[in-house]
Amino acid sequence: MFLADLDRLQIRETEIDDPGKSKVVDFLRIYLEKLPYTPLSKCGVNINVSISGTNEKDLIALLTERKRELFKILETRDFTIEATSQHQSKGDKFLKWNIVYVIQKEHVLGRLAITIKGESVYEVNHNYEVGRLEKNHSRLQIVTQDYPKVVKRYEQIIRAIFEEA
Image (cartoon, rainbow, N blue to C red; front, side, top):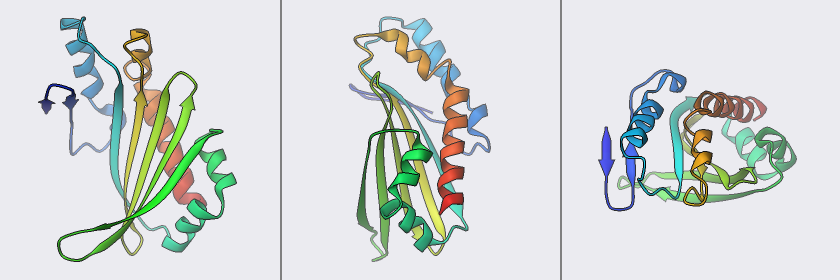
């Protein structure tokens, strides 16, 4: 699915079992080949999954008390983490953890959002974003050519967080 407005082009693929087999990056490559002068400032990949089974208290302990382990899992020297509560219309309250971390010095960020949806049920959104493309379009290959590496790294992070917890 393609969604476009004045500031953003979004290419989405839903209901896939293996993010590594997504065609989204191929669609982006074709789009950029056909319209090579499209102005870009950033480009990113979002991967969303539901996970169950990890003890909520252990996960919260990892995110709040065992940050040294989190640095190691994310392979970064810099990250911020915040917890927020979300309310839905039914009155349900969900705890959401937002983690923003530096992947490389060249304006590449990772964003990881973990929402506790119920007893041992979590929604996880991982965003991998390359910025400042207006200065250097060649960095776009981090998302296009290196997409299999992005997916593999995402899987390593999720596995490590939910196994460490």
